[in-house]
Amino acid sequence: MDKTELIKQISSNIGKVKVLGLSKILHERNFDLRDLIAVTFHNNKDVAFRATWLLENVFLDNPEVYLPELEFLLSGITKVKHPGPQRHYAKIIMHITDSSAPQIIKDKVQQLNMEPAVEQLFEWMIEPKVKIAVKAFAAEALFNMKDRYPWIKDELAQQLQFLMRDGTAAIQSKGRKILHQLQ
Image 1 (cartoon, rainbow, N blue to C red):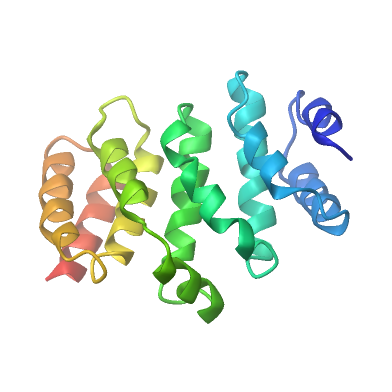
Image 2 (tube, rainbow, N blue to C red):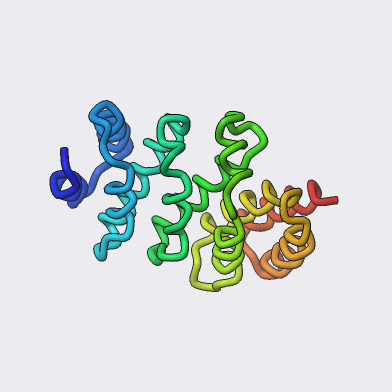
């Protein structure tokens, strides 16, 4: 399967079963992760969303295999414009920065400059048009990086307090949890 065939496969509506099946096929066929990442920036927001959904599954199911492409994956975060891909990129960053991430991932993340990702995650939290799920995953990812970048702690607390003032039940719950953990 090449990039063109992948785009054809995900141009129509697909569900979780098809995403999981395609993820397995992409992994088994050693599909170039850079090609998959490129499709996550597709002009069609639905194709971009489905590609990013695949990326999340492919990468998080086998992060050690795709470790050499992690820096490339992260370098594209500032180009993510559609809400669906934002959600999946934020979720990937949340997982790779989590304390339960495999040690090999933690070691690689430590070697990378995560500041562009941190800045983008904060931008998504601040931007009113960004979906709540993106903000929640971004907040969790930022929380995970608070020890590496100590200035995150205060900025994240302030942003969460702001979002919680008029926020949905979801952001209230996530905000309370993270604020409690920040103390």
